Structures are given as structure tokens and as C-alpha cells.
Length: 274
Image (cartoon, rainbow, N blue to C red):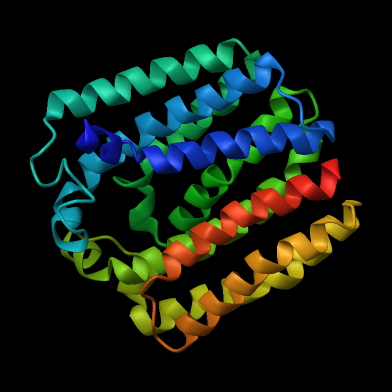
């Protein structure tokens, strides 16, 4: 059971579901939990489970090099192909069912996100920066998805952009960490084509620029004063990540950026509900 949870990245699914709920709260300007928002969160978790499991199938050769045995159970033979396929099919079913209970637009957006997730490892990741941008846009989508679910999709655009920005820094950082396995399977990530050093410097620039962007966009969108001090911890983590990357020390940067994403959810919510 633990290996199945690792396969579908259960911790990331919880963050995605929280992002959907936060997007709904931001759009409503209040902490409320209408049933459509619950179904949207369930839908996002289902689609995410399907995409994560499917990508582990495509990633298996690289994961045997890049990841410790505890992180990728399918690559190490601890999860069978049938179990993986069941996770993909079951996740897609839950995602579609939850989205259908929200709206037709939720179904279309959810299926488009699932298609991008399924295409990521076997196809998009081989394209380098374009693949990083696509997966970052999809990773930031839960905030928009939640706003869409409660009928105010426009309110989800700024949170979506900020989440996608941090995810892009994280994806570029992960490519630096994964360069050995990606080179082995013929992926043309920035870390493979330019080298880990230049790729880390590009990731550092993305991290650094998050700080002014995370001030300017919410200010232009009229976020409340509570947002700006609440966003400071996420900004400090982004700056720290950029400095470490600039110095060629990518270790633990990916985790720091994930924490920054979670703290950013809190700040964005406070900026609208307080």
C-alpha cells in the first residue's frame, strides 16, 4: 500500500487538492466549502494520480539511475504493471467523475491537463524548456481549477501564474538533479544540452524573479494588505533557492521550492479572505 501511495505521489495530490480549495476561497473571498469545490478537489487528485502513475511507466529507465529505491517503486519492481495501469484508469475515472459533478468546463480543463501530464515524460520532457513550461502550467492549474469550480475563473489567473512560476523553477532544478539519467535515455533537457551549471543559473534567475513578480501581480490585482507580509517566507525561500543554484548547490532546492509553493497558497488566500 505504501508503494502505491508513493507511485501516485499522495503527498503531491494533497497539495493539489489544497490548491483547488485555496483557489475557490480566493475566488469567493471567503473560507467556504461548497460541494462543487469538494468535487473539484477530488477531481484534481484523481487526474494527478493518473498522470503521476503513467509518467512512472515512461520514467522507469531514468528513475533507476536518478532516484533512490524508496521513491520510485515501479522502477524497482515493487509495483506491478497491472497495479500501475489500475491507478491510471482509476485516477482518470475519479477525475472525470469529479469534474462532471462540477461543470462541463471542468471536464474539458481536467482532461486537457491529464493529456499534458501523460505526454510529459515520454514526449514533452525531451523538448527541454518547452516541456518544463507545460508541466509547470499544469502543476499550477489547481488554483485556477478551484476558481473555475466556484464560477469566478478570472480570479484564479494570478494565483495560477505565481504557482506556475515557482513550479518552473522547481522543474528546472529537478532537471539539474536528474541530468545523469536523462542523458542516459536521450532527453534533451536544459541540463543535458547546456550542462548542469548553465541550467542551474537559469533556474536561479527564475527563482530570483519570482520575488518582484509575486509582489507586482497581486498588487495590480488588488490583493489585501495581509498578502504581502504573508508572502515574505515564500519569497525568502525563493531567494535562498536562487542563491544556492547560483553557487552550484542544487541539493534540497527542489524541496525548498515545494515549501514555498505551499506557503504561497496560504499568502494568496489571506490576501483575499482577510
